[in-house]
Length: 506
Image (tube, rainbow, N blue to C red; front, side, top):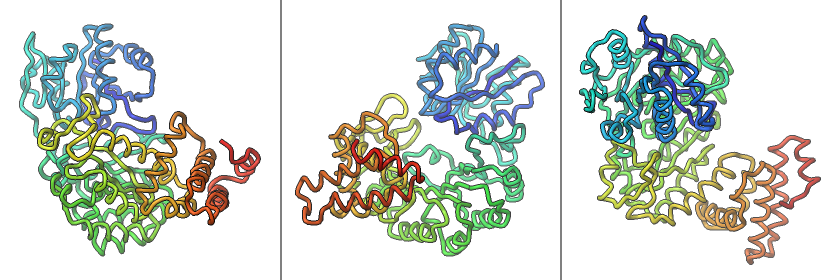
């Protein structure tokens, strides 16, 4: 039996850890297993052709909110072209409501729910050896005209979770993912990780050995996908300390951490890390205590913000912080206050995200309680709720766009610091005004080179002066001087020379 493990990643530089786990766990002598990855940007005909060319007996797709629609179209076409080919779907997007999904799409032969390191090899053996599928835990399948659903399988123990790269080398041009633990101690109502009880951690000696694998190969970045890496402060500190000691001067390590759990020992340790060794992602989400309590998070943000600020201050680690628009009890004004509080931390990246009503989550079950309206297809993003209108969310989308262009990509620090207080009383008000100008001017209709973003910001400064904002201070003249300094500090000499030759017109 010839098996294909495949998926459609959101970008080429991404890779799929789930497929690598299954590939590493597959040891069936009667099956030939291949792993191929595509992206959602690949032309559908190309993917279709590549899969059919492989003459596979079983094609297994890893399904997520960013690729499920394409996979459903692709799978249907593959089945029409080769009816005897069996198709299995797995992943978080099909692990819930799997029976309904198979009713709607009769070409799906199997759905494997939950983690597959134990259940997938057992399923493959059942196919190759003719065993009863009813013995395969976590499997939804067809038996003649009936859809059958077996009980959920047990979660693999830490000893049953293989090393991602036990059967392959990490690809140099893709992000390398690593996982030292599974599960999360928190129960955030919008997150699928909240559904699993308990944490399964790999032994520390094994973690160190596997990290050495990456360090010896000078991997550019290792991204930990632990849901809350520092759930155990001492364990996290020991891994950080080990990486600082073994530092090869090249590899960067990314962690998703809980800011609440940062303590003095961790903060003091991380101050000593080489610049660029670590980067951290911290989900703050909101500073509205009622909204936090409603989604089962700690409503005390004063201590959290202080700790995150302490992590940022040394300047040796890249810090990414998150906000979520669409939580219960957070209206437009409240979100603006959350934005200002988190913006004041001066993190390297402030991501403004939008609530997704994921299948299986508690908040999706609370749709009626908070009057949620959301998209019926993946990624199930919020359209409105009792506290935010659709128009409010569109305004926040516009703010997100200009924030990414100017606040997150870098190169505008002095210009933004100059223009913000002249525009509005708060960072949120500034980005609100900049977004309105950007969209009213029609700049959203095409992508822009970096140098053109300086020209657009110059136009925005000119608009402030035309609108009577402190004309005596010659806003546009000063802004152009400051924009020039930012430009010269960001771009190389030839690019700056070319910019000034063309001028400020856009």
